Image (tube, rainbow, N blue to C red):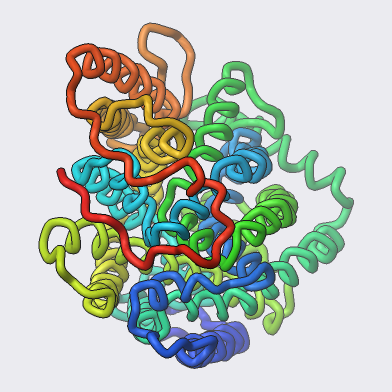
Amino acid sequence: MILAASTGKAVNGVELGVVIFFFLVVAALGFLAARWRRSSDHKHINEWGLGGRSFGGFVTWFLLGGDLYTAYTFVAVPAALFAGGALGFFAVPYTIMVWPLVFIFLPRLWSVSRKHGYVTPADFVKNRHGSKSLSLAVALTGIVATMPYIALQLVGIQACLDVIGIGGNGSTFAKDLPLFIAFAVLAAYTYTSGLRAPALIAFVKDALIYLTVIVAIVYIPTRIGGGWTHIFDAAQSRLTTPNPTTHKPAGSILLAKGNALPYATLAIGSAMALFMYPHAQVGVLATKSRNTVRRNLAALTAYSLVLGLIALLSYMAIAAGFTTKSLGNNNQHAVPALFDWAFPSWFAGVAFSAVAIGALVPAAIMSIASANLFTRNVWLDFVNPNATPQQQTQVAQLVSLVVKFGALAFVLGLDATSAINFQLLGGVLILQTFPAIVFGLYTRWFHRWGLLLGWAAGIGYGAVVAWQQSSATQHHFASQVAQIPWTHQKAYIAATALVLNLVVTVAATLVLRAVKAPAGADNTSEADYSHEGGEGEMPEITPVAV
């Protein structure tokens, strides 16, 4: 053990050494990935932004898992359960429901994108609905919703560094320097290797996560004593004890009265929103065949089981005696502190590495997805329509750097609680793209301007209502559930906003069709949605008018 000069806390040298070792390993893999499956035209946007659309089942399984199960999963889900109990378990049924849901429509998105060479979902929206404006709305929503999601990967790294002994109450420079170094290296290998870097690193990340979770579920209860009965009893006792300030219990291991609808809408809304995020769709579009998409969506249910086990770590932390006060009033430290207490230093370092690498992989994919959106649907459509695929790659590489360090500035300029609440707003925003993308895969009945008006209504309502949510410690964005207008029930804000979105979209479509407003040209055909890949694919999309 060595003394951290910046914080006065003891830095666990073994834990820090193990984390540094694995960081160097994944950094080396990130740079080597530039030569992995490299094509002769490696500067093409399809190569940098989608890995050449060549990933098979094995690679895709790890890539999507590494993309969707992040450091935030390790930190925020248990933190929600640690603070409030059963309501936080909505993340488990949501990841169970998401796979059959997306199994229905993602193969269609892959097929039409492969046929026409679409790089982003906004490419599809533009050509399906014949509207650059709607495409721009989808692209900007994806970028804005993803930015705080990238920033939140840092929250997981920060929590681990604080527990190791770096940061805490020390100088800002000492606390933030490791994050700058990590993101500088991340930016460098993403710039050179594109999507291949996180795809290769995902093997290490997922192996570490599975190892950590299995060991934790088996080993930590033996350290606590009393088995799972004691763990659940301790959690129930702590959660139901009235708070001396509010005189209300924090929660329960069972859903409290009135929480059924918030729980259900959180689960369903989150399941619908997950694959609207551009980083989730990038992993799908990078696959080499339609069958690869279908097989992986079926096999990825294994990650839902792992998430359920991760959620239980929160109750273990309660049974181990941790409280919000002992965690420095930061419930996100619950799992890292539990690992530090329960494991020998060398394995705690392995666990912290799983969380840290679990941040770097999705952060890389998210920045690439955001760069693809900006390049294809902002820069190409409105700035330089004649850009070559190679020029598009150059712009995307630069934008990916801006996105990463913009996210870094975002989280360093806010406290962690504020950053997480902004991420919740991201979920509210991204779900409003569901009608334009998913409904567009099946029908052209909805008018393009109706979809745009519905999107604006959902975005506006969701942003305002989320901003109005307050608590004793947070003036704005304090909750992701709010009262449904004209009722006494509460629900996930994103779900309520989506209902308003659909009402406006349908009403506007009826009016616009009645007045025979131009519907826009559809550049796809029904056969495109069952395209299996191979001959007849178009390298670039057809220009579309505003």
